[in-house]
Image (cartoon, rainbow, N blue to C red; front, side, top):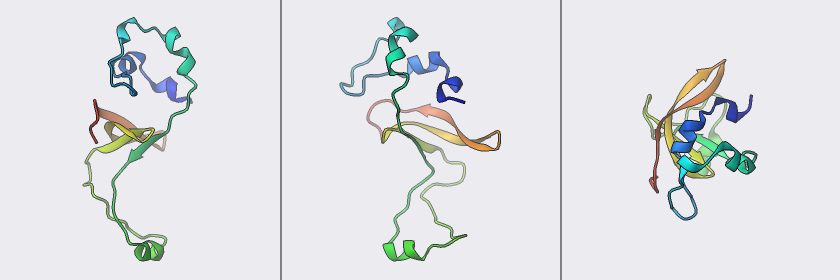
Amino acid sequence: MSDTENMDWEELEGTSSDADTGAEVDTENVSTGDLEAVFDVPVRVSAVLGKTNLAVSKLLRLGPGAVVELDRKVGEAIDIYVNNRLVARGEVVLVDEKLGITMTEIIKGEES
């Protein structure tokens, strides 16, 4: 299943912005055909559950079953990055026995 099959185009249009200039894009006058050239451009999507700092010596001692404590609490929103830029926050969900993400908040501007 492709990533675009699960996307609602109207939702995407409402969150578009020009990342290079910070200028707003006139999404009301953009049609699907106008953006067709960028549909196959790959982007890297990352979901960050939490972060921690470890000394290399502790990292090397980790083994199967080791628990690494993160800076987030259970149920707290995760960060969603596209090309290393924070774009949303969300929750982890189970979809057909695979992990997925539900976006609960779209981040506007240079928040991180």
